[in-house]
Each structure stands twice: as structure tokens, then as C-alpha cells.
Length: 295
Image 1 (cartoon, helix red, strand yellow):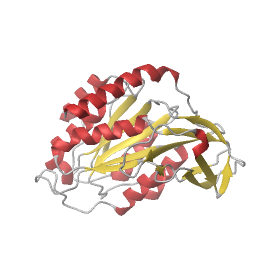
Image 2: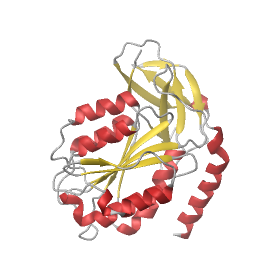
Image 3: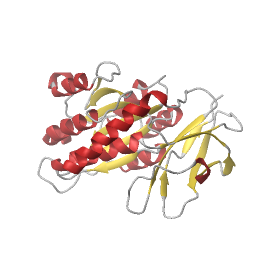
């Protein structure tokens, strides 16, 4: 616990120094942002690579990298909480996970909280006030608790909440991964996320811990592919005391991804396949797998 705390505090100092000097991508222009996470064989983040060690393929063809940064980058997040019947035994764990993510927001970060069950309810507008966000999620009257699960609707509303925002945008969903009542289909939600360039991070409440965390139903298989397609991440925990470690890992990853950018050769309003490669043995890179070449 002490090592995790010291790592987090060091991270805070770095963030304070760098948050005011970060390059920003604007949506709707011709530069396509690609956020890439690089890890070594042990799963440790690699943050000191140079621009020349990356390659992006657009529909199988190499493109010139016109933007590159490996510095701290602020995030804007929609934190979506699954409070449907299957998650009620884990309610305290859901709130604890959300709190631990919020306290790791850095200067320049902003977030908005939403919850979903048989309805989707979005909280107050985006803010960087961590105390206000925590106060909101601790009041059960602010959240939407119910019987059914509108997972895809919840993710879609999270994407909409980030519409028109510059920079790195993340939908952070805490769920067992089951959908039972959505009006929006998974493919439609994924299409929205692709078009907006939003990353999806899924914190799964599965495992073999106490009864409050033991899964009751299998997660939707499409959610994992959704995460991979957007270049986001998936983590799960089996014990409540793992929350601090996992949230620290998520925060470090989000703030230390490489920021790559390129100009498309053609704007044809079509979905383009992307592949990010790294010219470095023994390293693994994770990034979005597609973008829409909008005019």
C-alpha cells in the first residue's frame, strides 16, 4: 500500500508540471489522434520511446506521423456505473471503485458521472472538482438503481456527454458486462465511439472473491471486443482490497499513453482500419483499430 501511494504521489507531481503544456487534438479536423499504450513482457508501461519507433498503417498503407507526444495528457471522462439488479450485491464495491478513480484525476482532468439500470441518468456537467464528484456518487438518490440493465444505452450516453470536447476522451464503465434492456444496439454504440474517437475502459466486477463480487451471469462477449476496438482497456478485480492497485494502474495508463497523429490521404466518410506497430522487440502496443475519415 505504501509503495502504491508513493507511486501515485510522484505521478501527481509530474502531472502538475506538465498539465499546462500539452498538445491538443481537435475533433472535426484532418488530424487523426491515436492514443497508444506500450508495455513490456512484464506488463510494465514503457514511456520513453521516440517517434521513429512507431508506425501507423491506414488500410494497410504506412502514413507519416505528423504529431507525437509522450508527455502527460489530461483526460475527460464519463464515469458510467452499472446499478442494475445483478450489481446490487456489489453496490459498495462499485462506488468504491468510482471514488478511487476520481481521486486519481489530475490537474486539467474533468469528469462527469452517470448511472444506468432500466434508465440512464447523467449527473451534473463536466468538472475537475473531485470532492463534488465524490459527494455526488455517495448520495444514492443521485444514482439510477433498478432491475434491468441498459449497458449499451449507458455507454452511448457516456459518449454523448463527451461530444465537442477536445483532447483525450474516455468512457469509464464499471459493470458485470451484461445487457438486458438497451434500446441502442452494441454495433450502434461502437459506431458512435469510433466516430468520436472515444476510448472505452471496462472495470469488471468478476472473480472468486466474497459474495459481493462473485459473478451471477456471464458478461456480454461483445463488450471485450468493444474495448479492444477503441484502444481502451479491461481490468477486473476479485477482492475489494485490489481496487487501489487497479485504479492506480488505470490512471497511470491513461495519463502516459503516447499521443500519435496523422493526416488521412483521403476523406471519404468511410470506416478505415488502423494498425499501430512498434519497431521494438519484446514490447506490445495497444491502440484504436479504426477511424472514420470524415470530410
